[in-house]
Image (cartoon, rainbow over all chains, first blue to last red):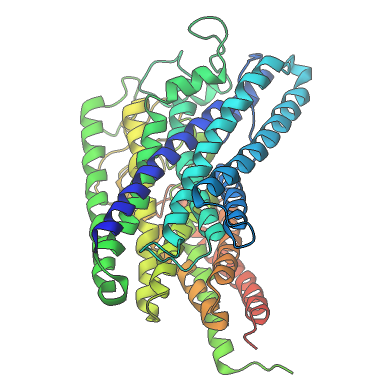
Length: 303
Length: 230
């Protein structure tokens, strides 16, 4: 372990934290991923809305696409034929990814909302104008950070030498990042923000499906309001999750040289996993003690 | 004229074992699909394939790094398994943070009355109109096992392909493809949602083993041929 590797590892962790946060907020502004099922249902049960609606695909494939696009563009620009500086190459690559994101988002929003015309759901051009650029801006940050992490892992003049080419490693981190964003931050948007009129402390009752909040703090609620809310908790914790994964996974191979101390690296990983399992148990016990059983519960099994 | 030799057969067998590990591993991953994203079902609020692939590929990154410095199969496969377990465990922990602190629901399983590991009663903590929420201990342990199997399987496939062609990018991409095929087959088998190994759907696993075996055998033979193993 040398100080440069440790510093690069810290930079990777920080970049991953920003990538995770912006990825989650991008999916909140665009209403991608699983909570979008409620947005699509809303119009059908009589709640027309001004929420953006872009379930292009699952988050992992879409983020893998953006990251791989940015990485391919960056590698071409960095190659001997063009010889561009790495920083600017990644910036241009991320711009290409953001433009693709914008095209997919717009077609997705228009396609989905026009198909719901029979439920009086309109295509709002002002929503399209204001939200698409916000989505693209977040996608740009995400793609930039993911490709920067991948570049740090693969650049020939840096100490971490991963064998995968830049686009493959960016693709792989993109898939992982999408899976994390979809699993963590989006729950805050789906279970809390979309259904804020119901009391805090319960999952969505299946009978209330589609009854999303359509009115905002002032006027009608838009998806940018949703990102404002999710930026307080869902986004940052998603960033923390991706940051922790990138950091912990690379930390064990930074402090222990995989070539000579491979078994120590694996043992450290196993120790981290055991500690996380214990921590989850503590979390579960504490939450059940704090919240207690539901008052409506009428079964025979005692809490 | 190319011919099959013993080492080619070993590579195909390694790919098939890797595929089977992925297929079985997916059954352990607690995912609640779209309902879980509204705290309406136990498990992580995403798709089976998405989470399993995300963790398996994180493992693949660890395995790839290890394989660049050693050719010890055990080290490579275990490195992949540990990477996948870390990804899965961190994701489930942060998922639980969101459920507990963001939505205010304790993690609870709905398919069993008592948690098989901790013996805690479950029904009193299920909010009305839902079938559980969050990742309780049994699902968490199950998810860790899922990460272990998925990561090990993906790394084994990568190891076999790398031994044939020695090109890491190509091998990684083929390994990702074979991984996703098996994850999708297993996902069909559990119809998108499962709480973990205590879920009654887990008993369907023999069917997934048959399907994954056939699919991976065919893909394995083609992968080895395409990569120039014969």
